Length: 287
Image (tube, rainbow, N blue to C red):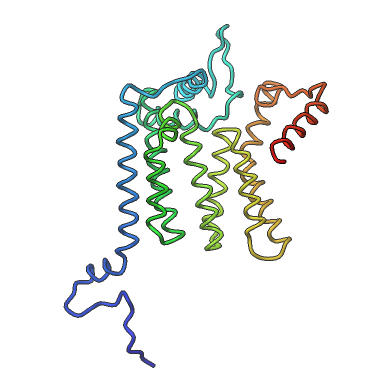
């Protein structure tokens, strides 16, 4: 049985195949090309902003020292005031470990490595916003506006121009968001695995990544399809797999240092009174 209907991508007599393909795919090609151009513009802008190098803070010293030592094969840590090697437990390990990998593979100095990571994270975030929003909505204008706001926001640029973890964390946060959205729409396990990996990396970059894992699990529970027990299992599985690397790292640090991430947790003696004051202030603002 035959049909006279011509598919949109069918060859047109007298027209080369590549022209037909371009005509059928010009909209997504234009959107993704624009995403790439905006990412390149963001990279150029951030390179200009960091023309004297990324700024550093007290945490940056720990990251850079730990990255140097790991790249040299001495382990992820730094020398204390008495010269004793101290494993990095106060800060999550992913950012200095990534710096160490780049130092070892490309032979860059630590500050150049931090700047390169910033450029990759900033341009990648812009490309994710533009390309991801278009892929989910098929509206290039929305993606352009979101990526454009990030490109011109001084607050965003300030999060990416130092030897700190904020820029990498923002990129991983966006990766979790769009991977979960793609999984919700397609149901493909690849997107679920990508979301898990990005959420795990986010929690190993900043401890606030724990909130990203919780939000991802909640999204799978609330927005997922199927029976309630299926949604609960899907959310629990996401949270467990995403949290596993952080739990292992915290457990290893606790065995080495005798504390959780070199921190101590103590209950306030006036905890109940403080809770009552907080409740009263909250009610006063809401009512």
